[in-house]
Image (cartoon, rainbow, N blue to C red; front, top):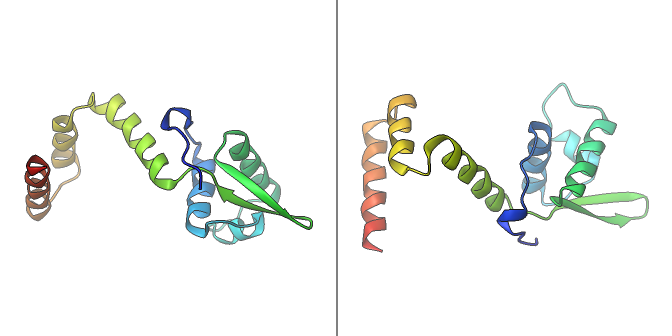
Length: 129
């Protein structure tokens, strides 16, 4: 899997992200394999095929041809997209401030005391690096 520059990664729509999550899990597959992994009600074959072609245009997916079948596979690693998506949220909603992010998590997401202790331990570990 090629590692694309994080600067060239584009934001995905909900449908595109759903297909990418399936492809990341499967590693590769034909449209039928992707549809099988989707929840009910399953989208139409042509709908998923169109989403995959858009993902190819955006540089997220490529394909190999075997006979009349196209086997699709991810070009962008899931980790790279997670980093891109997190960085965008972190920048846009938390002003690149870990303090604001942690305050939000503690206030809005009801982090338990055990989870706060774990986070504190992680921070201490990072300080030692």
